[in-house]
Image 1 (cartoon, rainbow, N blue to C red):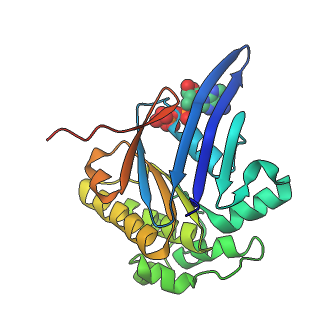
Image 2 (cartoon, helix red, strand yellow):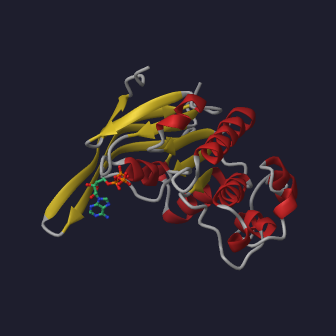
Length: 227
Ligand SMILES: Nc1ncnc2c1ncn2[C@@H]1O[C@H](COP(=O)(O)OP(=O)(O)OP(=O)(O)O)[C@@H](O)[C@H]1O
């Protein structure tokens, strides 16, 4: 089976004035459709850089990224943007919602930027993440967990093949954190989405199919947690 997302020997070097920082160092990663992979690791290890490269936001310095059979490095900028819009969903730390929009309009938003083939129904999706009763609410009227659910629905509305999730539980208490990651796992499994979640939260790792650790730009299989 072709992996939904594949990174081969990916290196990313940031040039910072005279200094060069190797954020990713020959990273190999293959994520199948329907799999939720967690990436843990210390601050500065390269986790956000991994998401940026996987989501076609930053081209690698060397190595290749494939979404299914498509090599991102072969695509001109417009095609890359179109592919990202349709096939990659991003979920950020605090939901990153637009302050003026209702929950339903947040979820509709990705469908307004251009043609999307076979989108999910925004109202149905909002119900699926348990937020239909807050369809008309704006972000300031929602709790952190609710905002995160709306952000997840927004990321899924285009039926992405790949979902990239950055610290989704950073602003949430333990119970809400469990619920949000359970939701991500369910969506990945039931809708065949290849999901990569960066997290510092070891309490949610049991919802994930695999746990990898980033150390100094290298991606390794994480040692099982003690106890
Ligand atoms: N635009 C940039 N210019 C220069 N260096 C950068 C840039 N972005 C990231 N870095 C450096 O690359 C390395 C990896 O950063 P990255 O943000 O990927 O780490 P991280 O694991 O996500 O950290 P955190 O857990 O703190 O978010 C760090 O040394 C960082 O300082």
